[in-house]
Amino acid sequence: MPRLLLLNNCALFLFCSVYLGTGVTLVFFQFPLEPELTVDNYYLPFVEPVTLATQFFTYMTILMLITAAIMLVTEWFTGKKWPPLIVILGVIIATVLTVYWILPLNARLAAHITDPAELKSVFSEWADLNRVRVSLWAIQWAAMMYYFYSLAYEARADR
Image (tube, rainbow, N blue to C red; front, top):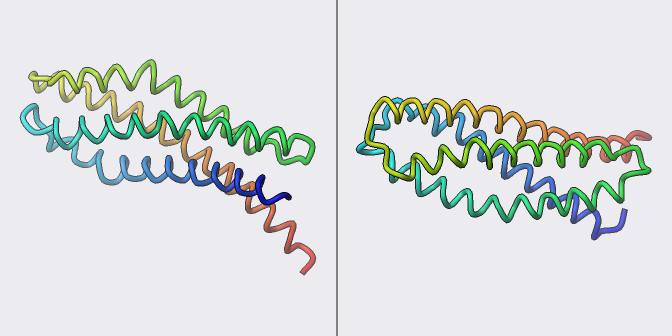
């Protein structure tokens, strides 16, 4: 495999790993704080980080789709087309979920919710949708891990 293609595929694995790492952080470190957040204290620890993450992930998602498309084209006839296909489908589904369901909730939270019941409801819905998105990110990461596992296995199968 040419080094430039390997670098492309490694970049895609890095992007999948960043998403998975973000998901693990959400599930294990941010979600448990949800009961402690109130209308008086949620804004700073929640809205600003989510806004910055959204900006970062917008560009990273574009790079993911480009690198996954390159990988798909170059692996199409090798029998290893499924990992980039899974990543592309996962990115598209996660993006649709984000744009149509999660970002509107982010906007509501950024508008300074003052009703405790509404805040609890919005956070609950936000967390549920993000659990789905984290699952998609885990599938994408697993697909890329399988790709590199299969390359390593094939390279070492004769030993």
